[in-house]
Image (cartoon, rainbow, N blue to C red):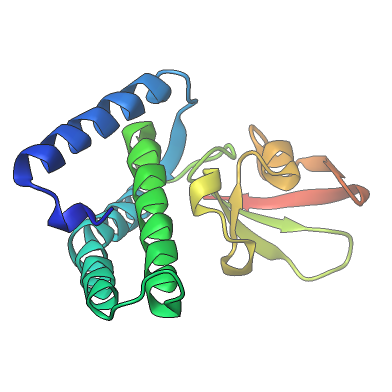
Length: 181
């Protein structure tokens, strides 16, 4: 189905049906903790998918359908797959943002919690700096760890100077909290 080619009334009914289904599922979902920056980034992605990407995929589908034999048309199949991915991502983002709890920057913190930046050190190794975020924003390579990860969970509610035992899948290790901001 090409969403953009639907009759406006049919599209409106489909959107309403989808939103109602999302609302029913939202009640069962736990909240997603996001920083303001993370929330805005996901909202921008959602807006882009709804406006730009959806139209691009619809255009690709339209062009592929005009091409003739749809059964063996690789371009048509690729466009259908892309449409499924885009619509799935839109639903995922809608649910995530509907259940979001935005964590506002509270300035200087002395206890590790979501949105805190924590400097830790394991043994004699170099200190490492992580910001504790919700799972949707986690990216360890960028220094953003989930509060649900083994390290994030272990750091919660600890202060500078505390020694923290981390139970990770590869085994336990100990870190010292140097600074909490």
